[in-house]
Image (cartoon, rainbow, N blue to C red):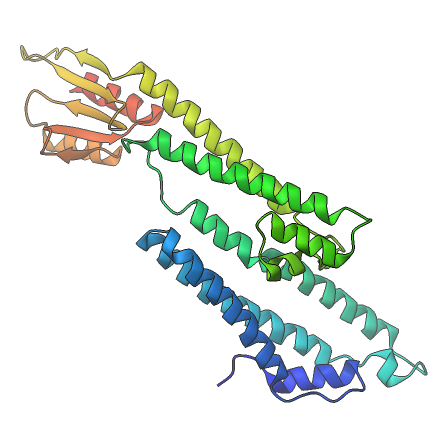
Length: 305
């Protein structure tokens, strides 16, 4: 069963045009677009990890559902409204026409949110591997990611510059876009305005620039932390003659670790767990991810021990 409602597509077409509706054309158009996106995703898969491949597959399923839903709702809107060209100007219901235009505006605003699947695919590829702060090569990985993001930013800027050249024909613009790395389908797609009449990359530049800024901040933060090295706090036990409690801010492992002189009682263990600490037998410590909140909890628990 087709996910596209052909009856709604036919009625919408008849309400807007004198030409006959070709049976199955709405479904064929939808299938063609999905096949194009699926091809892009398959081409992207060799560049990502297994986790990235799963994300790409989930995106395709999500895109298929959202696009089909959008097409059906737009056709449903058109099926309820007859254009003035078909109905004729006599006693034409302008209030109904205004409601139709309002619906169309909202539908095109929604389409704007997911109309550029190529950008989403490139984002999944660029952000494929989750770079954890405790990765041995976290800084190097982030720097590689930053380089790709900056290349993407320059590519989008270059595309916009080409699209703004008034002396070029559309064919010449397509050739120049292809010369800087865009595929033919994408190059032609960039020439098509969105519902606001915008051509090229708009909010994509803003979003990508924010990602660049955040990546740079992560790199700077990690570099500062790595420069500090590990720090250790020893809190002497008041009620015991033991060596006391050691709190280690382990920068390399990205963990805050508490070493007790013995096994803490049930009440202390409960408090540790409530504050995100977990027992790690391999090193004999209770540890949590590094944070100011974890540090405050560790100091409080250790002093009360």
